[in-house]
Length: 128
Image 1 (cartoon, rainbow, N blue to C red):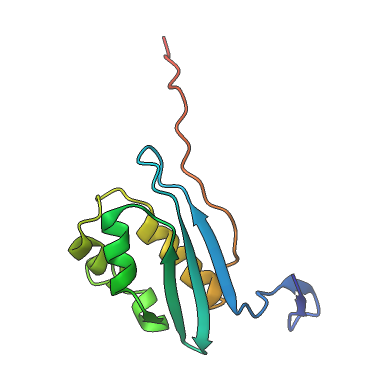
Image 2 (cartoon, helix red, strand yellow):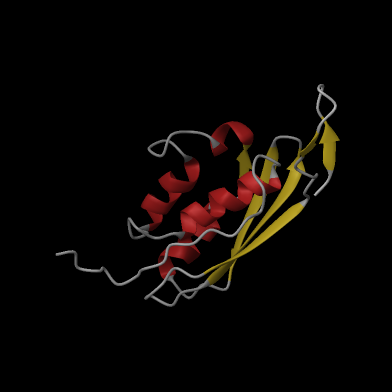
């Protein structure tokens, strides 16, 4: 990661220019893993491709997605085009693929660092 000088003279991490981000998404028990590829095509636009999923709903979602703008990226969930299309495609409410698409888009647009995210189930310990 590049470091930039702040006005105070201190170094701080900066997000490097990213052209393409690829995410391998494992949605869990369904086993319908896929690859999300997001490519920055303009200063405020990305194209989205989802590959490799055997899930019919994710295949429908993949066909419905194309370009995403910076403005659309930060729309509320109920109006966010990724989640709107996921609902139209019949995706399960807790499917993590739409979130993976948005995380990849954020990273490709330079709005976030490409850092792994995880939801991990663990045994619950009983407290007495």
